[in-house]
Length: 201
Image (tube, rainbow, N blue to C red; front, side):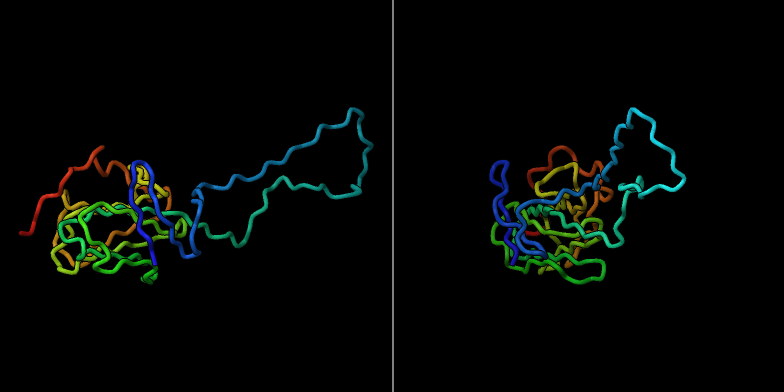
């Protein structure tokens, strides 16, 4: 089962679930630097010329490549601002073949607050977060997905914000790509409105 986190000052507390177990450190989604070859200093005396070398060089100037690179998992942080009916909110995450890999059932949340969830997903893969509302009138709050283990307005992968795009729904899908190329630009102002407007008595 997932354990959701609470924001305490600048620190998020809780455990991080993943498809591989509990992660203690985020694997940074950065490209691996290929090793460079260091050439040795030539000898002071000219070597004797041989038409047939006695041995092949020990290093290749071409970097080696792997035919089956390992898949890297990274943390995605989910920020959920709940509304006046938090028990009506649920969600799940599906992969590109529509398999549900994480989910939160209805009645998981019990108070109007902002909660943080963290999941471990494959870097470079596409997913969809499905925001669910059991009453069918939409979620009067906010959902933001961040690439990384902390909320960062410069690392937003996807979002729903009722203050700018409220709609009535039972399911609202947010597709996103777990990659630096999936980060959205200039989505929100520096600060959010403190309260979303009320759409239901």
